[in-house]
Amino acid sequence: MSEHLTVVDHPLVQHKLTLMRDKGASSAEFRQLLHEITLLLAYEITREMPMTTRAIETPMEEMDAPILAGKKLALVSILRAGNGMLDGVLELVPSARVGFVGLYRDEETLKPVQYYFKVPEGLNNRLVIVVDPMLATGNSSAAAIDLLKQAGATDIRFLCLLAAPEGVERMKEAHPDVPIVTASIDRELNSKGYILPGLGDAGDRMFGTK
Ligand code: URA
Image 1 (cartoon, rainbow, N blue to C red):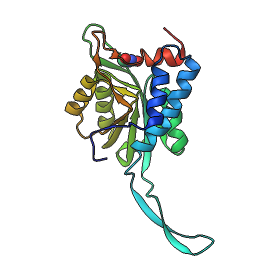
Image 2 (tube, rainbow, N blue to C red):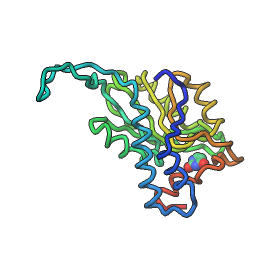
Image 3 (tube, protein in one colour):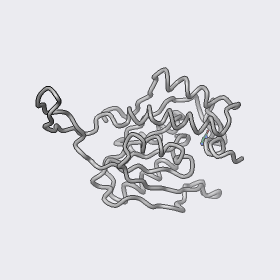
């Protein structure tokens, strides 16, 4: 993708996002809306996938028809909230391999620490789409992408639902080669690293925890 940041302002995305932000939405509604928005965002992030042509015959005549060139795709979820976006992308690209990165924040150093890392082989030959609904400080996203680059990934895109300006800046600094697709850039982070106006804790809202 050529743009570093794409905000998908499609009316359906914005409408569904408003329903998700509303604190009255149930966990079931929240998950369903996240799934639906992910389909629409995935449509955008898969733009500019390499294409080729295949010779086919329609009932009318022969043609060279456009088809994906078959670059393999790896989808990587940043635990745990990223899991809410997996099915949406897999519905569009069912053959994608799936990986998981788990990070927690060390309370003393405030740095992200890895507790789980399992990704498909051959990341160097794959388009890697990292999913996490909330790009807040950007620290865990940047750290996850560091790990993926160490594992060989060179063609990475980041898909999120909401982003804070601080997180976008952090990512631009750390990984200017990684395009970001999101449904909204919100106003700011609060002192605890939550996005404002945001939608609260995405994992808690998705899974009904607190
Ligand atoms: N993670 C969340 O789930 N929500 C935020 O607002 C920030 C980070």
